[in-house]
Length: 375
Image (cartoon, rainbow, N blue to C red; front, side, top):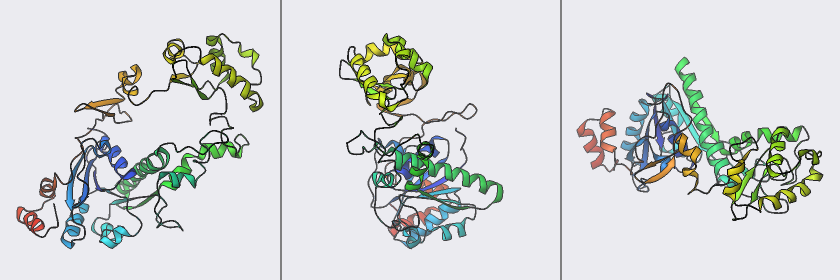
């Protein structure tokens, strides 16, 4: 099932954006094989980003295991690795070697800083990568510290998702030309790319450098969250004049009383008025009045509430498997429906089956195990 059915992806086990990329491709129908370290973590059934794969354990310090990995690479369409630059080369599994064995291979590299540059060999995490792009500076309230947006912008949006798109582009090229290539996906590059609309607003003079003083960063009264009488919150975002007019009507206000609502100088007074109004009722009371209208209001749900919201439930945005709730695959396809693949594997549980499917004889598998090359 899924539009990527028939594609074979080799994923060298890592953390964060690499596994997320593998999950996205597996959800879309690709056959993803994870090569785990023989002495790596055991894995967990609840590791949702590991769903849809099989797992084989190889001791990549062993020449026999490296050769086994290269035999698997020969049958693959694409590869995912997330080590620091140079590690795969030292293992004997760098792009030159792999493309030598499989010229059609699309070799995906996931790093924070990229394959070259002054910081290429430095350790880092999502927050560090987005700090270099202006994204982290721009998120937070005025006079307060920048707020890390979980690790969504660097690791997953600017990292794993960008790598998935890069691999698919490379696969299209390989399919048409027979020529593989290397995809260098860096989280710092991806986070900068996600900031393109904000930099565009800055270039047009519509975004200042002060945190929490701009249209989309919580400064505008018509694009912020508001606390309700029960301590819960609403997201309120009627940017367009007709949507703002409808919100005013629902709240018993007259939009004509706010002719300067786009003027930042008028924002504090309007925000104070909306703050007082929203504190007069509970969140669910406000939702009964406003949700589903063009007033652009939605409840701020926690992770317990979100899967049970009627809209999410109707669309199947979340799914439950073995009693555990997780996000469902996305996007949706009319001709090739997608579904969550098999439960995330434990480390190495498919080793023998994978090697057998790849053409290894029973005696070869036994020899690899005797040498300690496989788990």
